[in-house]
Length: 110
Image (cartoon, rainbow, N blue to C red):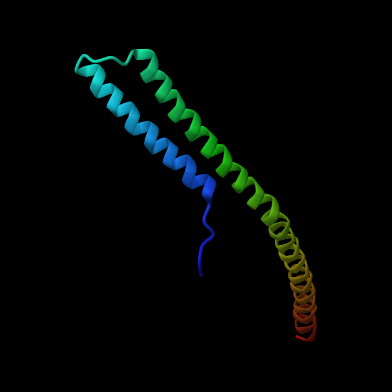
């Protein structure tokens, strides 16, 4: 089965990689005594963090959407399971009552 391509995810990851490469390049320039200031390096790092947070926010929204669609089905399955468990426990109680009555009848006959 072919998976759906998530373009938003691809773009945000590409931007993060590009900004990461730029930040490393700026750090190398700064270490070797060239022009970038600390402010420009920090702005690049903040840009990486912002895009990363945007990507996380997008994925959490997808997860929240998945939970909202899946949870009602899960809740119905749990309700059905509890109903089945109630019915089974009622049947067991009735069988135990019958068994108890049979035991008392056997004791009386002796």
